[in-house]
Amino acid sequence: MDAPRARLADIARQAEVSEATVSRVLNDRPGVSADTRHAVLTALDVLGYERPERLRKRSAGLVGLVTPELENPIFPLFAQVIESALSRHGYTPVLCTQTPGGVTEDEYVEMLLDRAVAGIIFVSGLHADTTADHDRYRKLIDRPLPIVMVTGWAPGLQAPCFSCDDARASELAVDHLASLGHTRIGLVTGPERFLPVQRKLSGYREAIRRRGLDEAIELSVFSVEGGHAAADRLIGRGVTGLVCGSDLMALGAVRAARARGLSVPGDVSVVGYDDSPLIAFTDPPLTTLRQPVRAMSNAAAQSLIDAIHGQASPHSEYLFAPELVVRGSTGIAPR
Image (cartoon, rainbow, N blue to C red; front, side, top):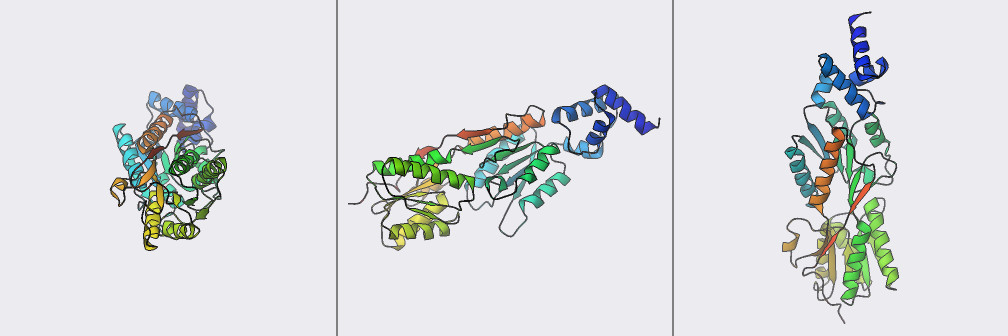
């Protein structure tokens, strides 16, 4: 038996697996469970064999962090908290920020795989898009590579997800506006293909139905300009209370009201979503639904670290409760 073959047999015997399994692990091929992979690598160490270069690099503690564009200040906050949590545990995050027309999520993943990262955290990625092909994530899981999702549960993926309860957020916003006497309450949010948007729509419709009010919904893009355009259409239909899918959209709604010569909150009340940094200092300070970013981010980072160490969290969605933060952009409904 030649030396490489003898080495495979020794490792297989020590790890109590087949030689074919050892070969798959040493060549970083998919189809091996995390526990089995760990057993083979431990056998390598026990027998005094050097790990292949590609496997040594993976132990360096690099972790991929894929986020959308950073124009929305909530995403830099997610990135900052996740990076801090990973760094405290000795992992170095590799931040990959997507921009329109720039490097795609799939291209970033290929770059991260080339760097042999120990795992990847996806924040509001294609997993949140119900029209996207989620096989891209299944291939990572099959490698196996630990992955964690933040915002946007994709049923069927064997990975944990940490999300804010978007449906509950919309209900809280509608109830708040209704308590101020608003009976014409509209929803301004992003494209319906995104799961968080679908949940916001569901929560809004439930709250409106419960109060016997009429729906008024305008979908647009997640930006100040998108919020402005959608809110302007709703204000034109007589809406006096606006529930917005993000703080940026809410700022656009405030701008739309003022462009019509209306005051906020005298004529139109506006509720945002996120409680992004500095949003308390806008004019007027924005009433919003706060995402518990720190709790979600720390939980996601810990879940990935546990998975890297072979102690994966249950593959389910963990919903975090939003908090209504009342400031100056909502007030008593006009007569």
